[in-house]
Image 1 (cartoon, rainbow, N blue to C red):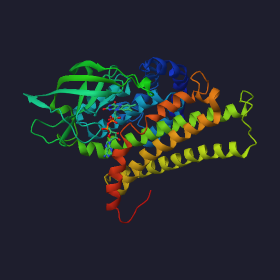
Image 2 (cartoon, rainbow, N blue to C red):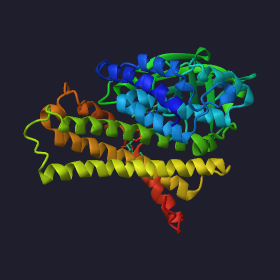
Image 3 (cartoon, rainbow, N blue to C red):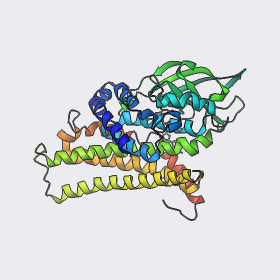
Image 4 (cartoon, rainbow, N blue to C red):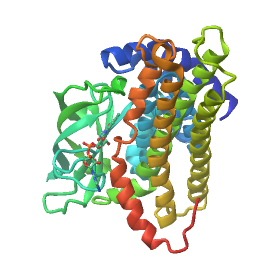
Length: 388
Ligand SMILES: Cc1cc2nc3c(=O)[nH]c(=O)nc-3n(C[C@H](O)[C@H](O)[C@H](O)COP(=O)(O)OP(=O)(O)OC[C@H]3O[C@@H](n4cnc5c(N)ncnc54)[C@H](O)[C@@H]3O)c2cc1C
């Protein structure tokens, strides 16, 4: 991460720390955190410099997401998903749409929400139910969206729709809509175990957009998903989860070294040493694999190659599932090591309890089962077993 980007992140972190408990308590959107990110230009991290952005790459995305998550995982995920949507626009928007949206993202005026989940198909990314309907030059959309992170606060939306009434369930178009092109009705609240500050409410969405607001080819969302939304999502999520667990561990280690430590924890015991080692090893493994896969994706993009290779898809799926499992296991072990008062109580300054609840969402945020079945099928195709 450049010194300039580090300084921007450092300016935002105190805001995230200050509001993490409150947005979790009330399950409200991190408005102060998002405003701080916008002021620091970080909503435009992935927007190219020619559109006024910071021109960052995936290595920057991963580093910033991890640092933000140490302060507040909900805010970090909100930001990371916005960057994931931004990457899809940078790579696949029509020139008109890029000129219309990217400078406003860079200026901190547009926060992007993602609408892929839909009733009747569950979380499956590459299928859809509701169709686009063409009326003259406009594409009409009318859709339920059961989980939309920051949906009531977003100023731009990327929405998957079946390409037309005749299209099959897997012929999807990705559509960009400005907030004022849509009618939004809140359909469900967001009262969850963790990730409460993402305020991922259910929405009923209707509206109309011109055809040049389709991102990628009409019916061609699969390409956007394979080349951008999927890979960038997995890298950014893994970074958020790792940053959350690493932040928790840093707090725990400081506490263990301080005189605030519970006296019943004997730092000279082999049991405590073994527990610390196991937590550290989980974080080391996720960190190593995250940086390895980030390097692989960056190199393929630099060479102008597709990310659709069997081995690359296996590596991306493995990153998502493994980081979800190991970071949650790590924070679970931290709760055990810290004990009831420091680890489990909601009012503990270590906030392990909040991070535990937040990280429980990792395996659900795109179901690990879906990725495992996909990885199993792909594994049979990769006879050379090209490991990361
Ligand atoms: C914090 C958070 C934020 C989110 N934000 C958004 C957002 O902004 N926009 C958005 O569109 N969505 C969002 N989502 C939704 C997310 O992308 C997934 O769609 C959702 O978490 C999946 O919900 P599900 O488990 O009910 O559905 P499913 O994925 O359909 O899973 C339902 C059940 O079926 C099982 N299952 C599914 N496939 C298989 C299989 N092949 N083999 C065996 N079992 C299987 C699963 O394990 C699970 O038990 C968010 C989710 C979270 C947790």
